[in-house]
Image (cartoon, rainbow, N blue to C red; front, top):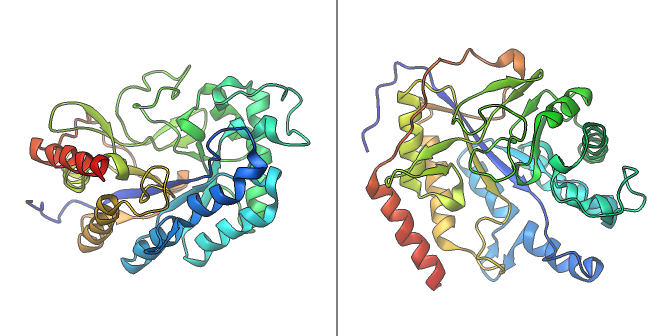
Length: 329
């Protein structure tokens, strides 16, 4: 891989994580929660804890600071001590903690944080602006009570955000968002041109950092996600984005992404991929500045370019081979 010269200022890379729990359905939540909590947040096996603890250990070993969007609504059902356990792990590792929200928890809470909670509505975009503001405010208070830190950034569960979401965020004093993902089914709604890959933008007074989308080696659009892209695709996409003058590159992952689906066993292909990614970013600090999402006053002007970030066919073929190996176990 050819590394460009270092005369261009470093591109800001934001390694972001959605931190959440899923109980494999909404039936028997109380019976399933303990095992789900253990798997999703710890991923304990004979090899170690390959969920959140291993993610933090790898990042700290390479001196990488990320953004951990923590979902807090579950704790209104199961108790603040569980949320405190999660946020302490992240805070003790010196990582940035921000707000993630899966609105489908709303009808599972007693008392409900909004009046109309009789039926499950999965996505935040299915709620009115007032309801979104109430849910975001409720989640913010839960998370701030756990961390003792103010929330400044947000990501909607399933990337489900619309114009009302940004008005609701502004009402709650949250000024940064990373919910838009052009490859997600529920992103955008009434937001114009959301399908156009792009960089930082402002929507209704909120600074927005969309998930980066690139063209893979077969010409297909793909989100920059650790579990869904090969290392070569991610590294080539970052180099191409920097060469194109992009200021920000947003990568997404999850607390359970280094685990095999439905198991606490490590997915060694993704583990090695994440190790390589963190090591590579550490090695090329002159090219990439890895860190939290900047607050609005820290944002540099965006270069007005048409972003067409593509990677080689070989890097995409590597991902397909890796995926086949993962399916075959």
